[in-house]
Length: 146
Image (cartoon, rainbow, N blue to C red; front, side, top):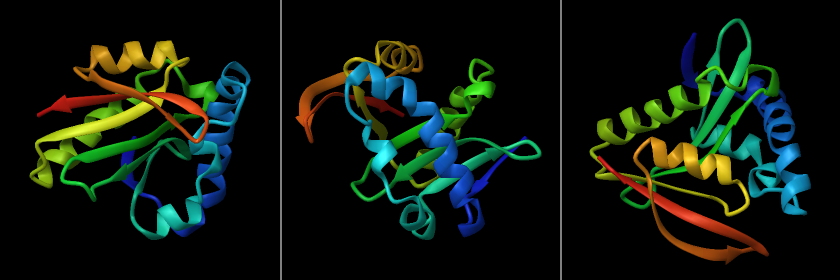
């Protein structure tokens, strides 16, 4: 099982995983989460998407290193592969990337209704920094010092 930068040929798989992983959250939130609206062709071409594969793509992470801290924009795991530590493995990869880029911290945001995700991020050492509305959605911003 390895993590690698996504390639153009991975776009359909990436989009399929994101849609499937976030669909239950869309029902809870009452709107499509922002990762469901992203342009993955563009994100892949900019080198921001990494995939975890084991014979096929099982999960992905989208990272943005443009503000001096690594932003984890999205983590998505195929629903039939959830609960096996793949999301945690991708979050550890994000920490590795941040350290290799000399960044002092990681940031992320998640919808305030995604309580289980907030708990996961807290268990990984992230702390809430603030809350705000983004495009009609209420988000919790979190940060982890390295």
